[in-house]
Image 1: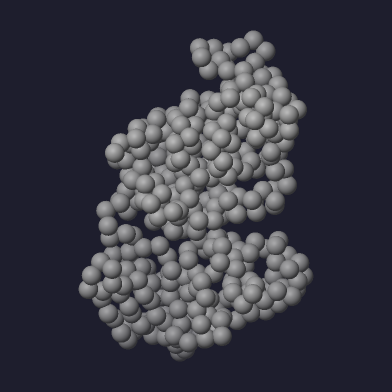
Image 2: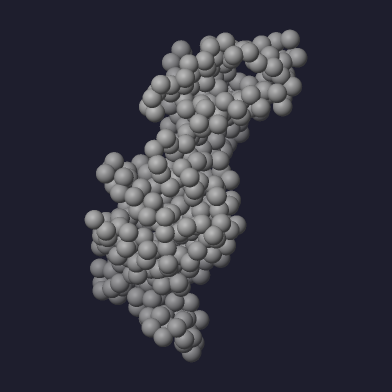
Length: 402
């Protein structure tokens, strides 16, 4: 038998972490002994435990310890191990793959927080500190963290304070009380604003088609949005509505199809590109309303990421997907809450770039997108199956209350 001593710290009981640790050990064919256990006496005090984990052979123990590392367990001693990247974008075979949970790496006897936390990355030492780096962005010779000791992951803990993100997280259903969820979202947006954190909106073209763009434009105008992440379709239909009063060829005044309206979004893209882009179109008086108009007037960050389906596209669209991914990641720095509105493509992409500690609200007419995002394993995400126009109107009303 071989053994390793591990430690765990946090709200271990009410976040269900300790039970999961015991289950992982037993499922892996191992055993455990609780060497020390201290229960926090107040809501703010963390609990602490020290366990001896045993297994039949080193390989089995390594598998168990790797599984426990994703629950926040750490060996008592031992720095992280590193190996050089073989070539640009080529990692050593035993590299450690990150989650969206906050991660610390033990380097020369000290624990360092991983920078730019996000999932599916390598941990690379840059300037003496570990950074979460996408595989394709790792350079030859950089020190890449390997699986094993010296890496501590802290899963998000269910808040002991009342919060809509506590009791509704990971429960995706059309039958939840949407009023409570929307009021809770407004409350968390206020908290993010007070804490100086960014409020991020990820929007799909259905926001425009459903009429929710008017409420969203007012939220931007009133300072409730700091970052807008979307693609060509949303921006194109938003400016189409401003210029031609149609969206996807449907008159937004009467709801009727317009003869030849299928070319309207192309006409709008052409007109905006002629003057140089969205900002120039606003400054020239071509675009006089809508979400993009208010974003330019307010000076908020907006990033348009391209896809293979794009018409045009608008000149502002970043058509290089790697460059767009970098721009999204940069815009997400400092995010406190993210609203993902009727966009499978961009919502799932943003979900993969966010650390689990960022509260996320996903709104869609079908369950598939909220379910996929909630399955990322965070207690800070809720999904609402409802019309995005209804959601935005109710959210605006809630934020307007004193």
